[in-house]
Image (tube, rainbow, N blue to C red; front, side):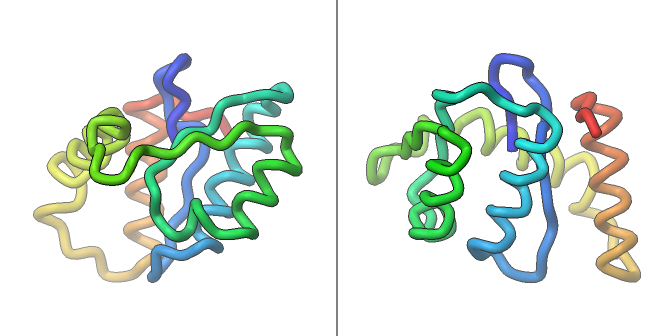
Length: 119
């Protein structure tokens, strides 16, 4: 999860599947670190994890306002897409990690070093 104002990673999670649990884990990590005030604007794409009732309920529980890209409008998420492209190019494309834990550790070091993530 990226904070566009602070220009840093504020929450992240890994999983074997891209599902609501993964999105909720990243959201909860960001909330724990940043403690955002009521009314924060949370923007995402139209993926099913972010559109799920559980995710929307979590946003409401944290008093966040949900914002989603329009259908077919990829420009709304250019910053996130750029971040993932850079992460893949600089960290994961040419590496075969022995375990999921090893990959998670490398991603953690990358986000903490390059993007100054708070813990």
